Amino acid sequence: MSKEKAQKIKLLITDVDGVLTDNGVYYGENGEVMKRFSIRDGMGVERLRKLCQIDTGIMTGELSPSVVRRAEKLQITHLYLGVKDKLGRMNEILAAHGLTWEQIAFIGDDVNDLEVLQRVGLSACPGDAMPAVRECVHYQCQERGGYGAFREFAEQIIQLLKQ
Image (cartoon, rainbow, N blue to C red; front, side, top):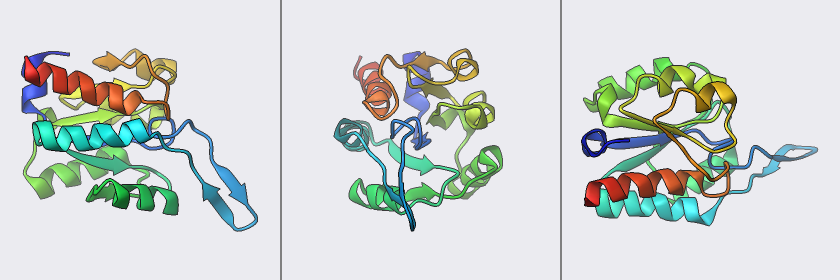
């Protein structure tokens, strides 16, 4: 990752399952009961906003009440649920907010994230991402999904911008 790329970032969008969570979900007879999120990742959202004026968004293929609650807690207003075509949705987001691909950072972990990861200005994945994803990103986190990978990526951006 370079300082030059980091300076252009206005919005960091994250996948949920496998990035903000450990890929696990608890189900009961009525569906999803809960997901586990890292508090450290939440601090990464806050630090990006306050120290760098970089907004955070969430994009997931799931329709998860747990994700809605987590986004509310972190004051994330860019929330995109039930997204099956992430590239198409990203194009809509860029147009709606007057942004370019180089102004977006994205962290994802699986093959459904590849098209977006290959186009954004900065891309990252957790340390336990799928091999194809690990091969295409600008930054591979040491931390696993759900255990601080988002925070690690956020801190890398913050450090580049503080240089």
